[in-house]
Amino acid sequence: MAQRVHESIEVQAPLRDVFSYWSNFENFPKIMSNVEEVRMTGQDTSHWKVKGPLGTSVGFDAKTTEMDPSRGIGWNSIDGDVQTSGEVRFEEVAVGRTRIDVTMNYADPPGGKVGEVAANVLSNPEREMREDLENFAKMVERGELGGPDNQTPSR
Image 1 (cartoon, rainbow, N blue to C red):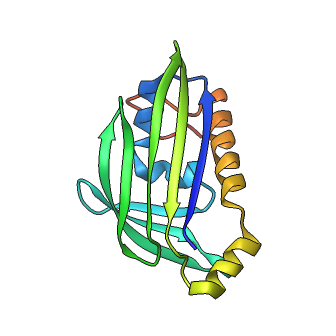
Image 2: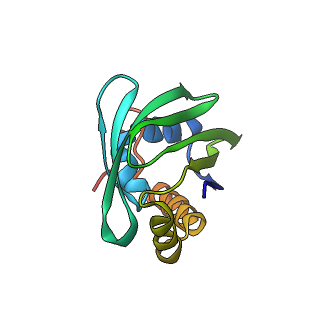
Image 3: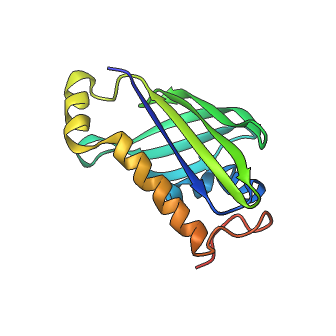
């Protein structure tokens, strides 16, 4: 069964810095708990390894369909075990404060109906997305985001 997950959060950081961090997909394992690895394979293509059902890992290739600070980041999977698409929108709601709005769409999960049942039993995508965004907000509050020239958090 296809699924759509939508969450948003406001963080105390300038839009430019937030966009800069999110537009470096190799930062995603630091943001999203289910992302194990992201490797850029071309200017607008990437390979993702994510946690799958029952302790497995699944991979897919994605194409970036949009990359614009004023409009956000969009993507579609193009090959692999997971069929997904989505977008992340950024809005400056006050000076130095940014709203992050994430929408992810998933087609049928790997493993068909059995995989879907296992995934539903073991995970709650809405809760996971909310927790990931809250953890990102904490990173920002601790000053780990870095500036536009430093896209990797300090340790």
